[in-house]
Length: 343
Ligand code: GCU
Image (cartoon, rainbow, N blue to C red; front, top):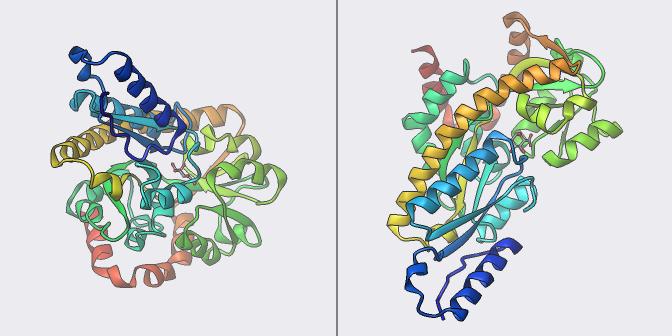
């Protein structure tokens, strides 16, 4: 019988595939020509966005590249749409190898690797170019190497644009407009504090519950990037979108350390390279989708308010204390990041 090592195949599909491959091996022993296509590892990948979303398309590209470059020895099964659980749950499962790979937002990940808060501080970057200069430079590489002790290994950065506020009731122009409003945030202490400083009440909620929370009035507003606002249909139930771009929260492709340790250095190298290549692809898709999403929601009747630099400044000043509260130990890195934006 042919031996197949199905590492941590927590998804039913992975188990099924392993079983099918084993059966095929039993029924036709010695068919050497087919051996090359039998995976040595069948691994799971969690993604909480829809199939057509840029990050999901990036995941499929990653899986394809890994399969091709390992000659079919590593098969990665992408589970999109949050089928393996919300991001926090997925990260927890990865810590013991229950899920092998994922693409997650830095926000929930900062609960496991607190230093990541640095990269999602409000009004940290002057724009997308500044953020990418940081992530693709030495600072970004140091962060990728900062996962020791987390049970996770970081592979590559994905784009998630800038996040802005939206709600069903009124345009938001000043921090005072958020007063008394219950605003959904990602599961991150820093995001909770940001809303408090702006005068609202933060309601940390998993992504897949935001639509119904808006619809039923459990929350009064939320914040996200253009593609999520559109793809998750939040625009249908919260038509006032304010382009305030309070944060840029990058995404990361990560792998469970338990899985990683089982792979040879050659496989690890291939996986790293494919993750980087898929990230370049995702960024290209991201740019296109952001423009399409913004157009689509406006055609659907959403009312967009773009803040002037002076209006933005009021938000920026209100959240200033968050820097010492969450990044007191990383002032040097913050200074370096800010300096990179001036060069
Ligand atoms: C972005 C990100 C998701 C995340 C979501 C959120 O859309 O891509 O991974 O879950 O923000 O607001 O929770």
